[in-house]
Length: 133
Image (cartoon, rainbow, N blue to C red; front, side, top):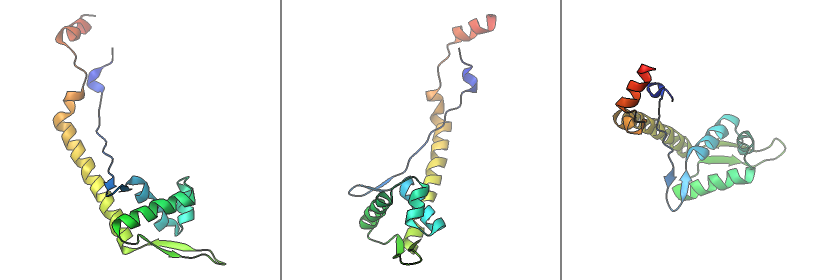
């Protein structure tokens, strides 16, 4: 039998923002952060092992739902294109990460209150039998 006193359970919360459909979550947030870091949608998508087309689809869906541009786009050419986050993109990333942080804190608080409900029940007789061995 396992030593139940050493078991630790945690609650994980995954935040997604919905409108007509889901349009903002951890994936697009990471994509935007990588665009910020690389200056390139293509490089950000490659880092996430995502197709360039899928990256565009995700960004376009969020922009349509939010009614704002999340990135600025400079078309390619001899030196290639570039992208950066708009003020709305920066605001969305910061707000999403802050919401995630606060939800995680709340989940931890709730686990302190309700976590024992998810622990295996060890009956007094089983505990006693274990001590006698």
